[in-house]
Length: 125
Image (cartoon, rainbow, N blue to C red):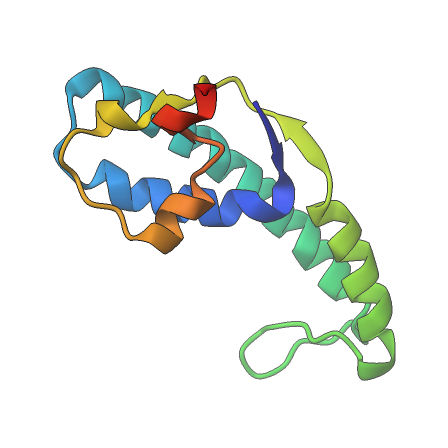
């Protein structure tokens, strides 16, 4: 399955919420494995974001030990980080049929963000 780095954070958050619900053990295991993979990707993206913040800062930290992107460098930062977030990666995961989720409830907004992970019945028609 192909995913864009920018969408992984939201998918991972929504999957974490699902994994807190009672699911059949095999399905729970599949979701847990996927969450782990996505968390690794998110961590790598975050490391790159921090590098970029440092690159576009004045090199000094504030009272909270944080770097801040200089105002005149914010456009460059957004462009470079945005380019990273548009990268597509391959994740080894087969979408799960919606029917496998049983009676759990998922808000429509979250379900829409999970559309690459969950296969809806009418997609084959």
